[in-house]
Length: 339
Image (cartoon, rainbow, N blue to C red):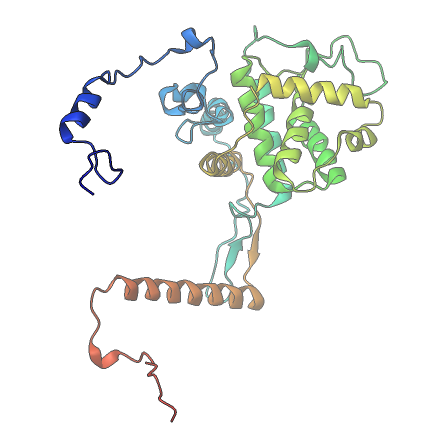
């Protein structure tokens, strides 16, 4: 047991310190830059920092940036009101309905469930103001030129790019696509978001020569992003009889590339476009329909109100730090001894 070579005897602390003294101190390696590693990929934080970008250039990305269609429509609205004031013309009979003691009128269009017909009308009106108040020297891409890529076999007139389409013509085109493809009102709002995002990113203008193909590409993309059961490109070829699948695929591909594959629509941006469309409708005397409050709808609203009040009371009770012992009604389980 006294043998120093026994395995039970450990080496002395002196020897351990001498062994550690031969180790080199740790020196952290310098971090390599992206240029040194040969990787020039942009980090996701650099791409998604939208707050650093100018708000006026990103209305479809930033919730606080004003929409383009609303700013373009304000000039015409002011001129219209000025003309009515100078000529002493009455704007016409008011179609707005007001509630009374016996009847309550409610707007059936909400941000979560917009009215389909009037939402399409508002989107068509926004596109109309885009075309009417466009930049004359704006740039146009060949993929959207209806002369190079016609939507029908009928000959495109020589002055197809000279006359602005009316709002009714735009509405009929959009309504036909939405009715045939059975798209929702939310898809119409997303279509307008993609349209303005395209005009901002690609730095182009929508004009009489390209508005149909731009709107078609925005609807095609919005239906695939928003709806769970998206419409295929071949289905649009059945709606527009003379267009080919290859043309639809190329339109979708270039539309995505021009959007830089940014198809995200935040809820705040969606809500901003919805309320700006309502402001546009009110400024142009395009009021949303008001329906009288029925008994069934009143009962549903009352049930929702009770549920909200119950949830509010539960939150108030959860915030209390202490509860009186008199109000405790918790059932306590005691162990039983069975002999």
